[in-house]
Image 1 (spheres, rainbow, N blue to C red):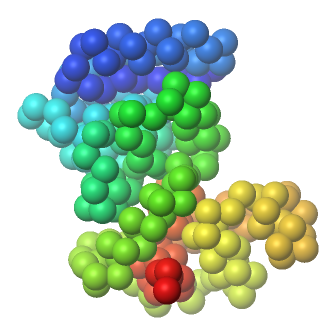
Image 2 (image 1 turned 180 degrees about the horizontal axis):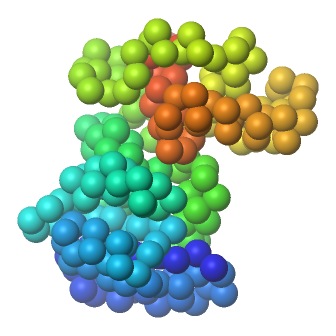
Length: 224
């Protein structure tokens, strides 16, 4: 059962999300919060696998609350999906830097939201559609990298194969797609990704993607 916490300052929206989430047999809502501080309290007291976190809330906002969750070793299993109507380059990147596993507009279809919950609960990065990755790479290309992750030298701990896998992860490929491209089994890919997470001290695939771009292992590509 996937435990979900709803953090949004709009009660009507929280109610709609609750009805949607609890309509699924594999999900349950363990709590609601109208600001970041309350969200932290609910997560710590009632537990959560996934937090749907509004980015703009009174007091402690969604980004700050996400940073608190990411920094707490006791909450290492909690994944955050940032929800917002403000789909700008800055918000996409700052959400991931704060430790979020994904970023989704509030206008997303119900099925898309439910898929997002399942995806991040399974340890995947919610970086689709491709347009979102485009925003990330365009922002990172500006050179604004302060406090953005490990230095490039940290990639020296990776094997050549692990670097290859990291490049494919940054491209948004699934384990099966990476396995087909590298001609190995999906289980082997999963093993490499687990080693990448450990060696790079990353919480999930979203942080692996950020590391790949911010260390320069993967370069932004632009049309034309």
